Image 1 (cartoon, rainbow, N blue to C red):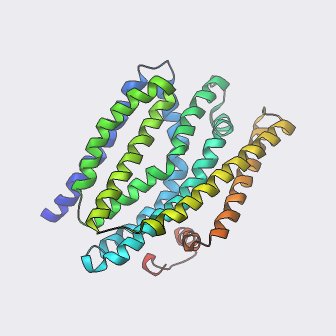
Image 2: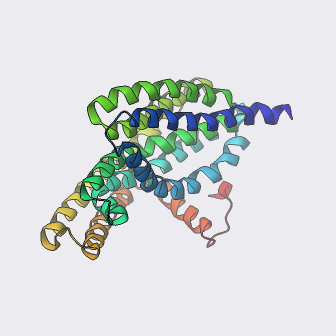
Image 3: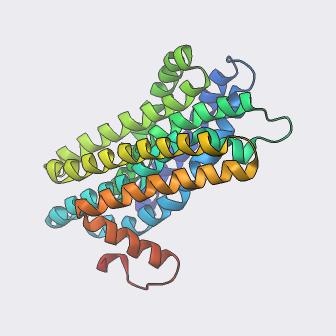
Amino acid sequence: MGEIWRLMGPATLSSGMLLISVYISLLFASQLPVGAASALGYAQLLFLTPLGILSNVILVPYMPIFSKLAAPENWGELKQRIRQSLVLTAFTMMPVGALLAVLALPAVRIVYERQQFTQQDSQLVASVLLAYAVGMFFYLGRDVLVRVFYGLGDGNTPFKVSLWGLLLNAVFCFLFTQQFGAAGLALATVGVNFVSMVILLWVLNRRLRGLPWRETGLPISGLAAGSILAGVVSWAALWGCQSLLGTEGLLVQLLNLSISGLAGLGVFALFAARLGLPEVDLFVNRLRQKFGRSHKSPDKL
């Protein structure tokens, strides 16, 4: 019972601090022009949908793996699994974030722009969504590292980082809303996730006596470059489609969004294939497993 409380106590408190973080954001949103708080909520729905779907493919299978490798004699394999999970996170989150940033406005118009929801409202929500999209990798990457600590039987370190994150969130909200308005609230969240991820990596590097930085950084850098390229291609495709087809009408907007998104995803798929990363096959296997087409256990992937 004591062991359970030692892990679950900090985890439960960390979950509670998420609500405090939301309250801090809403407190600063109340000081902005009318619509900032609503824009934050609308953008979060679009941001969390792909994040929630893809995060389950990564977080759920890795938790028991991290736990099995917690003993010091298994740290060599644990480091490789941490590397694998972070590269897999970059492979899924970076291209989605790039495309979501580029296609934020047409996506918001398609989903929300009805009746009293005007194009000006779409512009506001799209600016917040763009800020969230930039930080998708840090959002999920932080969650992956938190699972590593839980696997090691340490719930206190993520709790302390979350506690400091509340202070950072307030500071970032104050600084960023002065410059970026409602989008600054989303940038504050991105900043907290980035700093938290850096701290967690630093602590893990010391605890595990070094992490495979080069083996992790090079493929993530390659995936970042591929994601930027995909975003540029998607933006060019969107510009071309809007020039030919226009921007008004639900069918036209859906066509523009579909063509632009598929163009960006196609370019990223070709780029990622050239990198020759085993995480690509791993992700496909995870998807098959998720939808019941494969019954392989995570340890055998």
